[in-house]
Image (cartoon, rainbow, N blue to C red; front, side):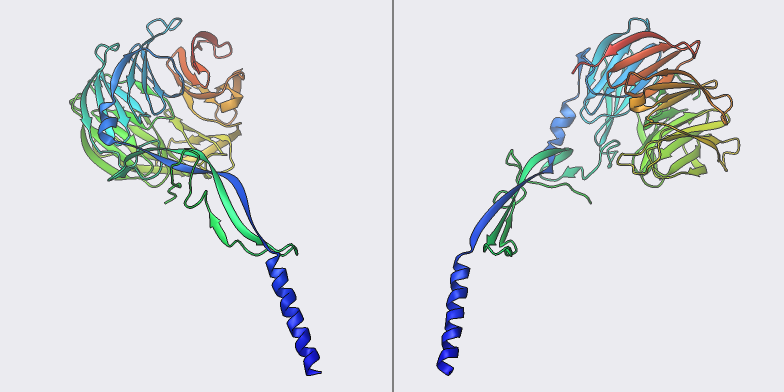
Length: 429
């Protein structure tokens, strides 16, 4: 009996060994993407600023109007200067190549622009030949329209994240019994997160007496009196520009988190964030103080204002979060206690503008919508241009300047029910 039992045990052991011997090591590749940091030498970035003749619009961003000129941002690349003395035939006369730029403002023929960490000042007395007159280094620790970590002591300035195709490789044992073992090895293209170009990396998740221009509602720069104001994700940065060609960092105020835009009206600053609108009193221009706040659901939030009302667009489906796509009209007759009057549904609103009761909404893919907003509780549609993807607009009395994905537009809106296209400078891909 003992011999028989021993024989069975040995047979089972041999069978188990044979089964184990039938297991096959297999490898499976899964394609995906990682984001790879791109660095540039900081000295090279700073030396790359130059002035060129007019170049085609390709990837436009924010807009600014000063005197008879339009300044159009080329996202992260520079600023186009458009001679608009004849709105029916604007001329692209110059391009300032500025790495990492997103915002601009002008006072007394001095153009201010950001360049990653720095503030630049250009003399545009001759708009076709701007001259760099000052650079304030390292003043924007959180570059205005970017995210992430910015300066590496060895690699330089982090300028962007690039999506790269990636292969994840899993190695496992298949024993043919439907119960494959857990991976015996997990590698990414042989070790590390390797992309198709051979690089290695992953995302880090961690006034008075002066002449100024007018920016759009998506702006992070604005000017009041002798001060330039710039907002980043958390702060309001103030610069003394009493001598416009010699801007000096003055103060920095912590506002909160996810700050997006700034819009001036008289001596008030309206600051948009992903969670609400902040109202600052800038009557003492060197010391703006918070006097009111309106909170809304989480969403992207540009804002414009007049004497009685603030107009806020909320946009969902972006990094801002939230699910609302709407226009909020807010009573600001009491600046310390703003109150919502009414919300109106929109498609995907970006920038907006207000001029004497005429409200312009750049509703993204839904186009340009123009409303009679003299009764904010019951606004009425006047015109709708639905055949364009719009971004921001600046109304200037009778002419509105608008930037869209396919070009820079100018409209005569003396009759808001009958917009007249004066000109278009197309985007060239």
